[in-house]
Image (tube, rainbow, N blue to C red; front, side):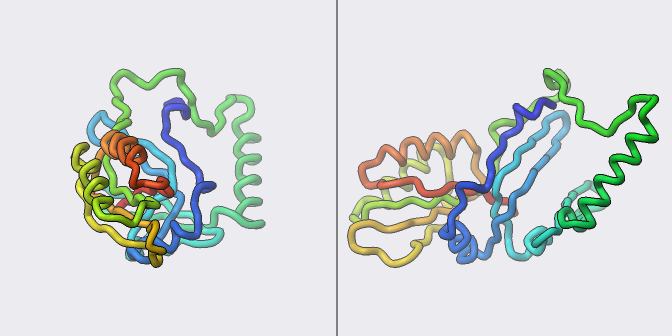
Amino acid sequence: MPIEVIYREGITKLTPADFETAQLLNYRIKLLAIGKKDGNRIEVRVHPTMIPNTHPLASVRGVFNAIFLTGHAVDDVMLYGRGAGCMPTASAVVSDIVYACHHDKAHQYMTFVNEESISKEIELVKDFQCIYCIRLNVADKPGTMAAIAGAFAEQGVSLKSVIQLGETDGVSSRITFLTHAASEYGVREALKRIESLPCVNALESVIRAEE
């Protein structure tokens, strides 16, 4: 699979307000690479993700990395260990050197094959479904919430909860919307409409969440 077709988003847009919001909702923010397979349909994406405090991945910190797998028979399995730091990095480098020395003549190297196109038997899911945490700076006046909720409803996006971050100054407030599972396309279309509303000052943050 060409890396260009994988949705990728880094951590540079995250702010302290995002972590404060996550804490209020009993979530933690982690940079996750997510892969899901359903028959010949695969979903692959990389982005900051809110996960519940009770999820095993929520406890992964510092130099540690983890892989969380869910199988039909084995249920949930997590592989956990150091992924950074002096000795773990040195171990990985030496391992690669030894592997290359052993397989030099046969030219058999561990690598990712970046084909020009995806196999015709595989369907890449672009309009994936997940939960969204959306923070807006809005005008503090009657009708604001109704207009925003209406824009979400037009695209079939159902809201799970709404919270206000901090105190209002009587002019504007910061409101966070947590959706039920919704399509990426539907949320994007709803946000286009919401950003055009006179009562919306700014779209501050959009973070996906996984349960």
